[in-house]
Length: 131
Ligand code: SF4
Image (cartoon, rainbow, N blue to C red; front, side):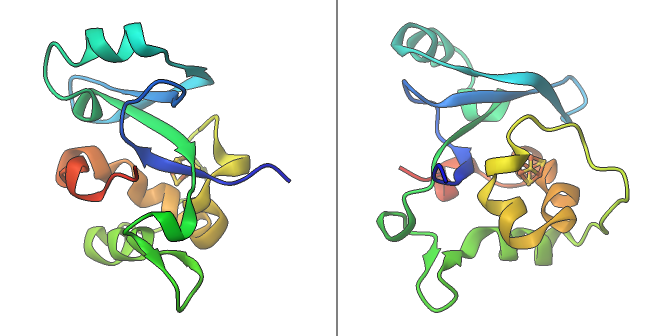
């Protein structure tokens, strides 16, 4: 199986753009992720931090990431987000194009998706983004 994807990646060449933050701060998920290149990243960095305007995914690097929790052998960030944001899981999941490979969904299921939309609005991505 292909490796799981971190849904809070920084903007970098090769990352998959999968969501755009709308005027209300909510994420509009793309139908298909788009792999971005250096030109896109350079252009996106001209304005507000691209991580505040878009959502990117890239391969979960497990132990190479400061968010990796060796005890649970999983991402430690998603559990914190679910706990702090405390949004209840909805029956209808947002139509997210990376769900099959999403690390957070793999670990927390619908709860991860219910709280995922809060990431951009409430959490500084620089502090939590994987490398
Ligand atoms: S947690 Fe759910 S909504 Fe967020 S990126 Fe993963 S699959 Fe998509």
